[in-house]
Image: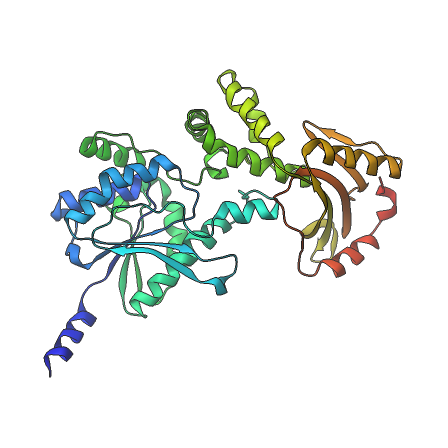
Length: 403
C-alpha cells in the first residue's frame, strides 16, 4: 500500500468528535474542562471540531466573552473551530461557512441571513408552543448540513451541552438526531452537573459570570420569572439591543393582536411597568416615530382541524402593503379608510385597526383588517390561501360575524 493510501486509511479510522458550541454556559464549561483536564476526555484535541451555528441575533456581550476567553484557548490548543450560518430563507440557499480555522479570533454573531430578518419581514415573533422551529431552522438544520458534508456518513461522536436538569431534551435529541453514524454524548449529564455547576466552574476558571446565550428576542428566555429577571435588566443596560425585540413585537401585534413575545403577552407592556425602563421606552417610541410606516391589509383564513368545525386547524395569511409614508400620514390614511366604511377604529394601546371581518368561533372562517405599522413587513400570500379563504367565507355562520 502506498504512503498516500496509508494516510488516507488512517484519516478514515480517526475518531471524529464534534461539539455543538452554542456559546452558552453549558457548552463553554465542557470546553474549559476538556482543555484544562485531559482526564475528562477520551480523545485527542486534534480530533475535536467545535462548531457554532450563528443565527445572527446573539447578545453582543456573549460574542465579546467568547473572543476574550474561549477562542484564545482554542487557538492555543489548535482546536478546529467552525462557524456556519443559514444562507437564506430557503434550504436551497444552503449554508455559509463563516470561519474554519485552528486559530479562531472573531465570533461572527452577525451571521448571514438572520432569524430576525425572517421574523420582521413576516410580521411575526417566534412561538413558544410546539417544537422550536426557529432553532431547528437556524441551528439544527445548519449544523446538520456541515456535519453531513464533513463526516460523509462515517461514525462520529456528537457532543451536546445538555445538563442534568434537561433530561427531557436529552431524550428528544436521542430520538430526533438521526444523522448517519451519529453517536450523541452529553458530558454534563455523565459528570452529574447541573447548570449551576457549569456556571460555578466557569467562574472558577475565568473569574466571570457567563450570561445566558440566546437570540436577543428569544421568547423562551421570557416565559418564566427567572428568564425575565435575567433578560429585562439586559435590555435596560443595552437599549440599542432592545430596539429589535420591541420593534419586532410592535409590527407583529399590529397585524395580529394575539401575538406577543412573552408567551402571547407583550414585552412592551412588561417594560412599561418597570420604573427603571423609562428612558428605554422613550427611546423606543422615538424609534417608531422615525421609521417609515405602511398601511397593511391583512386577511387570515382558519381551517377546521380534521373537518371538525369546533376545532381550529392551521391558518394561512395574505398581507398586502397598501401604501407608505411617515407615521402621522399613514395613521391619517387609516382613519380615512375607516370613515369610508362607516366604521370606528379599534384602539389597542398604540395600535389602530379597522376590522372588516372578525373571526368566527366555528371553522373554517376568516378575518380581515387594515392596520398601520412600520414598513418592515413584506407583501406575501401564504400557500393555499385562495382556497382556504373561499372555504372560510362559506364557513358556518360566517355572515354573523361581519364587523
